[in-house]
Length: 333
Image (cartoon, rainbow, N blue to C red; front, side, top):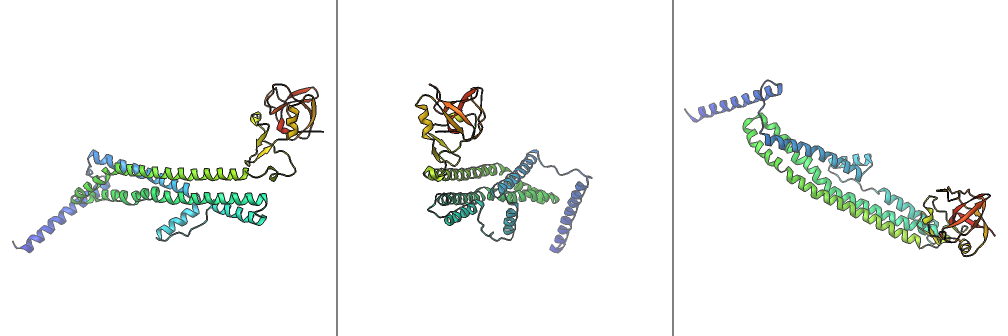
């Protein structure tokens, strides 16, 4: 037998083997033959890989929604990514709001109270916008990229390896490769855990920056004189609530963070005896039977009682009597 005859017979034998295995695969697909069974350990690893893939996709997609809530912007970024082009940089919402505030403050005049406050708020919003941009960039690099690499890399390899059952000789080799990749799922989890820590640290940095920026802004706004709020008023209404007795009589805090001094004539009444007439500035609903409900602009009689909390006076309307918050009143001459 010469070499050519030997090669022809070998090729014929290989073709017959390939054909028989192809037939077996077809019958397996049609349910006419028993599948080539993987060992239980490999089946368990395949199940673990599928579970990891499903949850990785969900976490990755929801993280993208968190970092970029605008679906149109996400689609645009996806298209640019598939075209292997860099998406154009866009100003984010906090930066845009900050720029509007700065422009408005400049227009109104930096020397005015409102203009100066707008500029301060605008600068803070722009810092928050910068922190938001840094969060997105850090999270995309340290958290989303490893997750995407697993979905588009390792898992695709794992999935494609399973298709190699068509050829038994190839399946034996590829199954070993698949086994190695599957056994690496645990290390993948560990790697993703480190990436998750990076993501959480990036969020911590972002929220810490936002908190510090707002503290700085509150201090700056609190430094403005009280007459910047309203030159025609001597006090600012607190938010009415059942817990209003915890507000100090010497000062109260408005929602803007400014500290406004309460009227001195109300404090003087606490230091003398007798009763006075007072006009009610704001509606007030009594929290319990010891308090007196008030209507804005009505006139009542008030007087101090020894031992009463410094933030309260005793109010009297006809035969009705009860405690009233001092910050809701304006004494009449």
